Image (cartoon, rainbow, N blue to C red; front, side, top):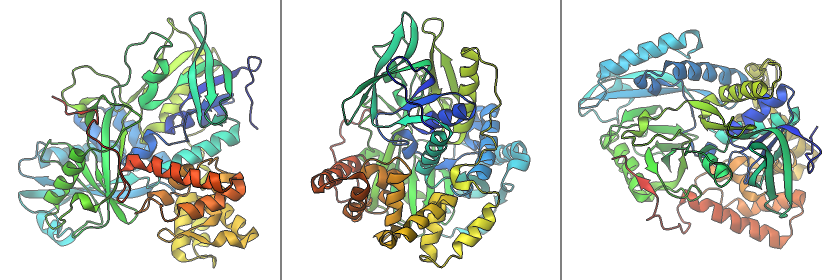
Amino acid sequence: MSHHPSNGEDIVDLAVVGAGINGLAIARDATARGLRVVVVDRADVGSGTTSTSSRLIHGGLKYLERYDFTLVHESIRERHLLFRSAPHLVRDYPMLIPFYAGNSRPGILIRLGLAVFDALAARRGRGLSRTVTNHRVAQRWPHLSRKGLRGAALFHDAQVPWAERLCVELFLDARHLGARVLTYTTVTGLIRDGARVTGLRTRDNRTGEEQEIRARLTVNAAGPWIDHVLEGQIASKRLNGGTKGSHVIVDPFPGAPKTCIFFEAAADQRPIFVLPWEGRYMLGSTDLTYEGDLDEVVASEAEIDYLLDETNRIFPGAGLTPDDVLYSVSGIRPLPYAADVTDNAKISRGHTVLDHAPAHPGLLTVIGGKLTTHRALAEDVTDKALKVMGRAPRRCTTRTRPFPGADTAQWEAFREDFLSSPVLTPAQRRRLLDVYGVRARRVLALAEADPGLLEVVDEESGAIAAEVAVAVVDEGAVTLGDIMLRRTLVGLGGDMGRAAAARCAGIAARYLGWDDERIAAEIAAYDTELRRFRPRGLKTPATAATGDRRPQ
């Protein structure tokens, strides 16, 4: 059931700004504990930072370098919980770490780190790390550079190929539990009663309708935009010091590995990845101080060259050039602000929940957070919210609560049964299972009711028309971009779904009542949305003024 906050009379418990992974996780946890929640986002769910990540569910190996054992422990626990609660979205992901002469981190140190990591993971791991000899590297990874190679280690982490779907499922679950999520709604200001913050002023981006949402507690979970939410509303020191991370997407290249390679860049000693991803490769990521416009974050030529150069160095036969880049993905990590940092890697990747009381009671701001630990962050925020509101503690249920796509007692049995179904090709069934989990049944049910919905809308992925229908009917998609980039994921293919866009818009039109003019406008708006990815074949914006600064 949805609660409709009206002007003034109806007070919700939490008004959350931001429908990224953290805002949605907070809504899910808080509603599951009986609170009334409204989430507001000026765009779609998961359309900001969440969609620009490395798509890893990290056990937190990197954080051992800073002796951040708390974060490592939390990351390992959360990874373990996600394997159980979202088995369709999160999978085991082995990584090879090659050691080269001249690396800033000697192999012995990394081996020691892995031993500590394995000990911390204990029963929650996916298999112990192991040392790999040069001889074995030559056999299994013959195209990896052997110049100065001093052995390697193989360890197990996790990947979430479709991070967007984590957001969609958190949204579905939060809504099912009673939360109200208002997308394409801009927060125009905080409502204040004296010093106390008592809610949000909002404007619907499409209708222009203005609304006040009164809340006992307002939670600023806008990721890198937290300072923008507070700006001009309350006095606050700078809270977000996010760094820019970019990735490039390429097709398989000569010598491309089947395993993720996690190595040290020669240019700046930063650990970077060659990440196998859904039949392609993501190369990333950079870590640059960024002072530019948060709404215009694109990968610069320099970043693209850096990632290609480092990949070519470690895979000498790759021969990658900027022409091989299908598209790039760039975003800002929501890190705490730290003045005069010389090494961005040293900025904490943990999260804190700031209570603005006593200066401004009724307002919490969430600083930091990452994909892996979204659930733990939400538990912390809800615990704090109950305390601040003077409510008795209530047990958090999200540790064991399955995601909607895994809501079955017998996941493996469902999986085998679904994969053996006679409908569609085996590859299509596999894809539906990976994207929707048990909710793939709903996709097929729509197609059975209307056989026209079995039509393939995207040749590359094999996605079918029924997925567009599910995106709109069940999953809150309202624009073509929502459907392509954050529901069906057709837009993350090699041509970013441009060949399929008109077909998908035509199907969506049946459910959303779009006329021909609106269909054309949606396709044009989709092309505009793609510009930040700099896809091949689409005129891209100039990127001279990118706002990047290398840490001095």
